[in-house]
Amino acid sequence: MKFKHHLILFTLTLFVLASCAPLEPIPQSLSATIAEIENDVQIKRAVESPFEKAIINDKVDVNNQIKTNEDSRSRVDLSSGTVIRIAPNSLFILEENHGNEDNLLTRIKIITGKVWIVLNGGSLEVETPSGLAGVRGSYMSTGYDPESGAVRITCLEGQCAAENENGAVSFTAGEAADLPANGASPVKGEMTDAEYRMWAENVPEAETLLPSEAFATITPTASAPEPTSTPHLTSTPQPQLGSCTVNGEYLYIRSCASSSCDTLGYAEKDAQLELTTAPTEDGWMSILFEGEAGWVNENFCE
Image (tube, rainbow, N blue to C red; front, side):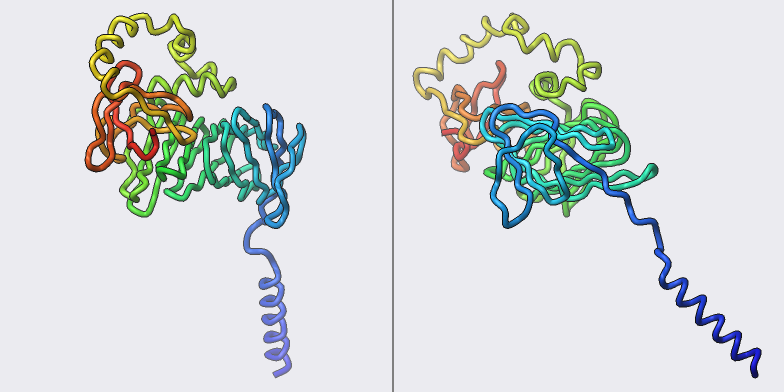
């Protein structure tokens, strides 16, 4: 009986010790700092705190918000070596940033605007109201327009993914995906010339991955054939229909009159687009975009 009593006591002691031991290692927090600022960039350090002017080397903690205004850009560097570049008129929250040598995870949430990710190990997830974008060991951009609800993701290099409640797609270098505002399954396609140019203009870290054409088309001499074709296409509709002005941060140009159609590229805020048809019953208008026909909705181009 005495031996049985000691055995029970020993078993209980092991149980208590086991219950106190962590089941898995606690992930190590990573640090993040603001490395570049162009014009007006702001940071919000707590939910109840106001936005304040950001400065170089400001620490970005989990749940902090970073906001760029018109004509403003910023770069946030993570201690893992990952770089996040932020477009004008953007707002995002750093939701998670932790890991160890085997498992690095960063998660951000875009409220509005666009970010470019240069990932250095591990994985990074971008949450938007229309779905989730993910990248592992590669270069990815994610843009969300709260007016249209559409999300556009480009994968310059490596492995990327997009998903919502109705499906998921994986894509790789030179490909892109759309998360439709209506919740339909993600649609995979190809990156446009305009998107390559955006990478070239905003992400110097990606220079070695970009085709030379991406840099050539930034200059006015890159599109020599267009002057001969554009007047021919615009001569008829221009006097009759005129143009519309993009009223959001940027507007996706579709290949047909639906938000689920392929994306030809996008026009930035205040850009003027030449109209070739009057609006349909659903509000879609045909316009000229880089010398070819495209479609936009009149709600976002007035």
